[in-house]
Image (cartoon, rainbow, N blue to C red):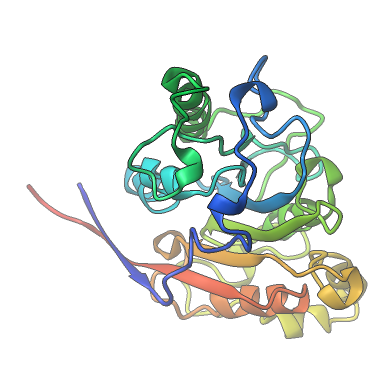
Length: 307
């Protein structure tokens, strides 16, 4: 049995990210969204795109039961899904044994109107003169909320990748962040035209690739610190690779505001004492990638208790 205590450096503004208030948005009806044939629940005709929340869950080291609960309760709870503003988009990517260039979301849909009379957003409430409550609430409950829960269950199973052509070992966290920032079909790059974007990363942050193997450079049970981003990128043999590994979030180059980044650091897996410089490395990497708003939640204790 495990006891998990979380210390938050900063409370991340989960549902205060979009610029346009919910009740100033178009009140899309069921027949105006892609609700059929596993559609993305987004409007068939977008007049404006508001916020896209991308959640990257790293299971290259399998999550413990307590950590799976943490992801559900802190990041993707039913309560959070209710507080998302209608038409905001949510995508979930699992970093596991799939090459970053081939990895695809396990879930990616817009949050439809909920039909909940208790919602703080009037746009959620159904119009009894023109709408059936079941038609409004159905896509939200059965396709959106249940879809998120099904995705989390799939991630928890941690099934192996059967495709040898995309199978990888290690933990290419930097590569996955870069691909999220540039692949157009993920709808998160500079051309996606959202008012705002938010990237949540759930990970032990132990980059493990040929050029940057944290498990070799700063092993879990040693006192060796991981290299700083500055030290790593300034090595002659790595400088060009490091520069090209940066995520494409720099507003001075793209002309687009970078996403807010929220990191849930599962430090009990790799950096229990927070003394390896892991957070510093990723802070420097993200800052050089152009991210200006970076928040951390830290797992401060993961202790086995006796019954």
